[in-house]
Every structure is written in structure tokens, then in C-alpha cells.
Amino acid sequence: MDNNSLLIVISAPSGAGKTTVTRKLLKAFPEIQFSISTCTRPKRDNERDGIDYFFVSEERFKDCIARGDFVEWTKTYDDYYGTSKQFVENMLSAGVDVIFDIDSKGAKAIKELYPDNAILIFILPPFIEDLRIRLLGRMTDSHEEIEKRLLAAEEELKAVALYDYWIINEDVDISIERLSTIIIAEKCRLKRMPQEIKERFNILQER
Figure 1: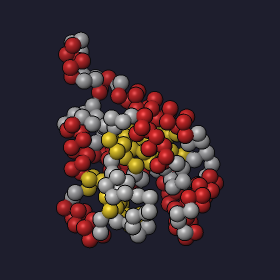
Figure 2: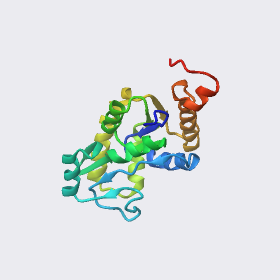
Figure 3: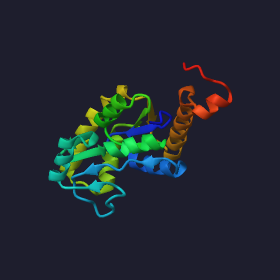
Figure 4: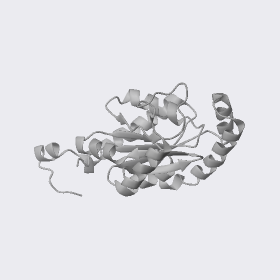
């Protein structure tokens, strides 16, 4: 397994702009693979199966849980979400960096399973009030759903201490610049120096 690969976990409360930031980051780093989660919720009109999520039935999802097919999974409201263990192992073996758009529970699971690879980044809104404004602006969720998301956001904020980095998403371009800096710095850490470079300069002593 290639320990130089990064598992970049990006988490945020609903409405903080995580999806927009993640998509722009992937454009800045096209070599990074996006981890597509499996979920049981209904597909929205603007979503594509296999692109945004893998949409499956609750029965099939529970079968995957029973087989231990997920690195992490969670139930959010009435729906299940999970990350394929096989996908993560394949990416690590191939030396590919991966971005995960998951909650704090999933972030904790990945950090525990892959401590040498996991980089956890939490996206914050400028102010907590912005979450309600952004959720209302989506016009995709009912009032009841928005209230549930706001309550969940409060719980997510309690988990910030688990993360390695934080970014306040007031300006998307600035957020992308900061995320890019984090990724580049992490790739340049001595512990991730490729073996070929170590051998070229006779840098054989591990720290």
C-alpha cells in the first residue's frame, strides 16, 4: 500500500458551501479522485447515479453493512450514507489521492483506520446565521428538513477538535487557495517523500 497517498476529508455543516468548494478543488487538482458515497435517499433532479452518489435501496445498503463493505457509514435523518472499503483500498494501492465529502463520524473512522494518510479539514461559514440563509436559498428542502439540518450543524460544530485544519468559507476563491496550500504542504512532508527520491539522495533514515 502506498503511504504517500492522501485521504483528504472535507466536512462542514449543511449550508457552509462544502459541495461548491469540493467541486472547485477537484478542478484545481484533476489528478485527485473524488470518493462517491453510497446512499439510500431519493435522487434529486440535478443528481446523477454514479457521479454524485451511488443510489441503492435500504435493503442493499444493510447487506453491505453486514458484509463489512464500508470504511464508514452513517444514518442521517432517515437515510444511510457510506464509503466503500474496496474503493479506498484500491486508491491507496494505486497511490491516488482521494477527497471525501463526509461528516465528522466518517472523518473519525477514516482517521482511525488510515492515520498516516488521513488529512481532515473542516469548513466553517462566516457566521452561524449564514447556514439558515444558504439552506433557504437552495429551495430544495422543506422547512422541517432545514430545521433538522440546522440541528445537525450544531452537532457537527462540536466535532471541530477532531480535524487537522479549519477554513472559514467567506470567499470561495480564498477557500480554494487555502485548501490548495494545505494539500501541497501535506504532499511535501518528509514522511511522504517517494522511495525513489530517498534513494537518489541517499536519504534512508526514517524520522
